[in-house]
Length: 349
Image 1 (cartoon, rainbow, N blue to C red):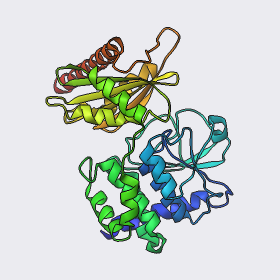
Image 2 (tube, helix red, strand yellow):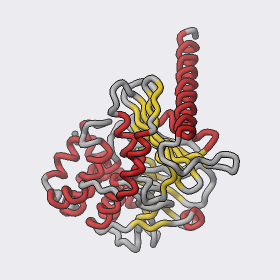
Image 3 (cartoon, rainbow, N blue to C red):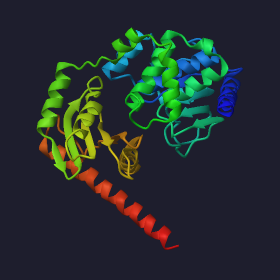
């Protein structure tokens, strides 16, 4: 529709105005950069007509999953890791597929995201659309509304892969806009390059950790949990795949794969159906103990491990698996009670 195109054209011009007059405006993606974030950052740089040195793609973490590393390598995408102090030293930052951390900062932000809005930060420009399946869809709309000549096979391949991964090839959390953007990009993207990026790869150690975690799998009703032991950052990518696999077990509606990474217990959560989503559970877990969030169907939480809470190195450890299972089950029940109480209060008013 013309009005939608006008809205996206206006947003694109506002983003350009946000960067005008500032020599370096980095584009911030999430801590473990994923295809949607990296592709969206690449697209925003094309929209802004900026060079890499003027708008570097930055993150507080590193690209860890092999397929994401392969994407960055094949598409010549460089993600620069920065510290919080370095991030706060920039005058202006565009956050895409993520949102700024809560708290006071002198940095001025623009936000482009499809995750639910978070509180605790201020921004000069905000475009948050949780009904969309991918931030890459939003960036595709900006570019189509302003200058379609900016689409190269490389950029279209990145954007379509971003949409593909965040929506499971248009099967999860997909809106009409995602489908339209995907169809448009398909005519420009390089199919051979897309195939090369999407080929999964796991280290032998990662596969063995997955196998032993599955051997120690615990279930409780519709919840399945696997514990992958201690993982270095390069092997932590097995957790999302392990959580996906556990969700395929008959009768399971919740799955979680956990592992000790650095000084954190990282838990990847998957959910199918239901009023309470994976993101709700991750946020609940993070309220007291760490950082977390995500979508209704998939989420991630990192719980800080203090000296009084250490998790074993061994994949499939029964005590660690049981702790995660019981902890998640208790949180799910608490969320159900809160939601039930809110519904009862609303009906009685």
